[in-house]
Amino acid sequence: MNLPAQATGGAHATRAVLVAADGEASTRVRVWGLSARERLERGLRRAGIEQIETLERHAPGTPAGEQALVIRADFFYDERLLRALVAAPEGTALRVGSERVAARVASASVTRWPFENDPQVRDVALEDLVPAYDPRLRKRAVPFVLPAEPGNVVRSRTASSPPPTRTRPTS
Image (cartoon, rainbow, N blue to C red; front, top):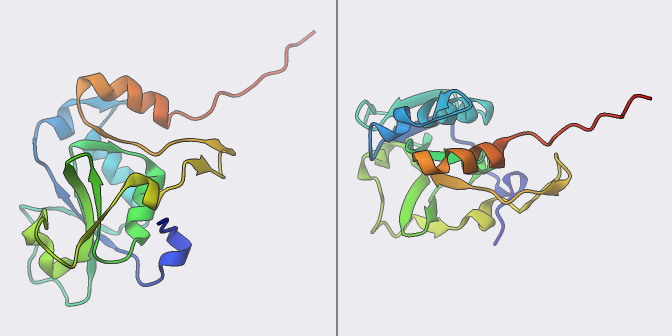
């Protein structure tokens, strides 16, 4: 069940609420000089998010009907996945293994994270949101979500690095 961004319809989320399960992991581990949290914030802004806040500082009196992306800040995310989550329909949650790492919900319900027993929030897998083929790179690139741990730094660098450029040998 693919949910490509252009086919989901409806409004995009313009607000993101970051959840830090382990406050240190989101700032301690760095990839390309950025912590997981800094990298996530940059990716969300490129995906069209206008306002980023934390769950602790979330204003519960947000306007009715406004949508938010609630997302764990202690993970590294593929940028294609961030764009797909921003455009996903309300009630979509991303589960990786046994953990729910992100959900598109109405802003008024953000404080109920992680929405485990909410019948209006359904889980989807990475493959449901982002296909493995990346047409911009014209190659197969499996989307990733990795915990922000020192052992995953090399994996996220490899997964997020641009393709190598080819140079012609000079004669």
